[in-house]
Image (cartoon, rainbow over all chains, first blue to last red; front, side, top):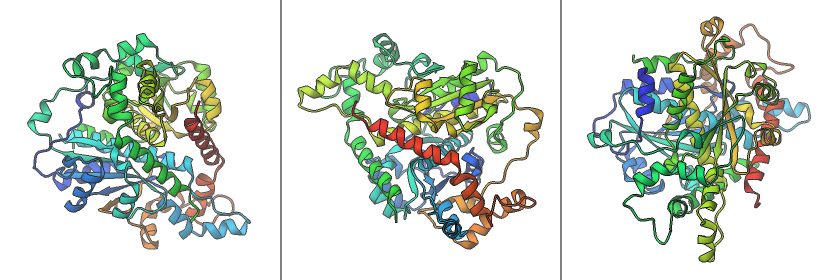
Length: 261
Length: 261
């Protein structure tokens, strides 16, 4: 197996880091790889904010579902879906006047533009994660950056056409993290289909959760008064406070994105 | 520089492939790497559809903005943001009854859940792209899969809580593609910020487009009656038919996602 495949197959999230800082040359190399990530129409519909200031890290550790390890991460990158840069450039280039001369209004970024920009931002983020792994750096995605939009908008001076889609913490893994076993994943048949979508049935679900049931729920009761993995996950994840907040916050971002200024 | 970094830095999109098929063992290895991609809460909120049937490839080559090279790609993977599998599992596990006993309605996937699932799907897609590169395979993202939702929904039997967020074509690059120069990217200062967002000004834009202007617009006139790069890109990309269709289609997906069935 080639070394890149080994790196990808051995990957696990790392939430505890050595205090050892990441050399500037390594960070620079990772960011250069990010700039080479595939991007729709070569438009680079994303931006990256390095979270360098410690007080800012500490604030984000709170606003991103109270995860103190974020404040202890040696390097934190926020990935933004970004149409603001292009929108500002269009204005700079006189596109509003060009449109007005044709009796049209300049189109503003809408939902499709946003999702395409999210693609760019996430492809860039995973490129950073893979580049970091090649340098022995562990990482952890923070989807919770989609929560508390109003706070993050002010904290990071986010303009209208910018969507904080994900954040990633990086650092050299502690010995304990390095030794941690990979969590189980669903088997391939449950995730990879052929030529069309396939709704799963009871037998499929049994196979899908076999390893999870054995490894994660063997000696551990389900949360509260739930009776099985599905009910447990509904309460613990899908209907948990952080997901309700993420849904509220994302709706607010979508509203802001669609507002005519 | 380590081989992974070299691979990431040398990467370019490949749209012309040798006829040489991709060995099953290589495809399997790439898919195993996909299953190991980071995923929110280990929930695997994505699915992959292998587009194997030739007539289906040909149809998608049409519906994804008329790009014949899609039909000629030896391997095509569609990445879905997928909450349907979990929603079906919740129902299978009696979550509706569990909620009803508490006098509550079971929550349905909303916008925040969708964006989180898009993160998973795109992280998986870029993992596949990187794994493929390690095997000498070129690839090209097809964002146009977000267009023509109604057609794709029927063609691929997509249920309500599934969003076709991206598609990727894979194949061994032709000699010509291998020799192709990498397109220019914006300089790092235009994309990577520190501790907050930075709106760019005229000087920034000049620096940002210097290489593009020299390489892409040196001998080539702007499209139609446009007068500069910004106006050209507005007409050629942002306000082009395929982007208008993508915006219409994504709005339809969002409506379907929010419909109470």
